[in-house]
Amino acid sequence: MIRQQVASYMVNGKAMWGGQFALTNQRLLFRPLDTSGVAKMIKDGVEFLPGDLAILGKVVDKALDYSTAYGDSLAGAINTSEIVGVIRGRNAALSHPPSLVLEFADGRRLEIGVLKSIGSPNFLPSNNSARDEMIEAILSELHAH
Image (cartoon, rainbow, N blue to C red; front, side):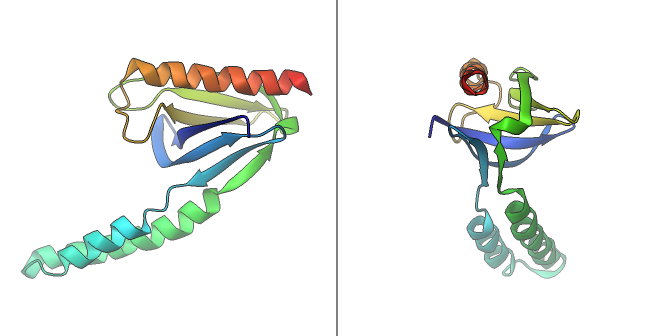
């Protein structure tokens, strides 16, 4: 293990799924946050709401199903040998975390949002520093091979 960072998959500039992003001497790993406990707690709470508000329980059910299926599909590893570059993406802003962009030989790009710590608001400048440190660690590892 070289470095770990709170991170999220980004799609069109929006953080879609949070988790832990880890750099080892051979891979980049992503482990999504397990949100099923939170979703279950919300679901249990909305069951007591009256009438039309009880429909929220159905919405939460769908979110829980989606959360489990989608989160599990995001867990995985990328061999560092597949990565040809990493660049700065977006800087920290109210609407999104700062990001880095992984570049692959086949032209694909993957944007990853980075936070200094769990619960850190997107807009904090310290998140930009955490992102830059992760970029440096990845570049160092790429040049080592």
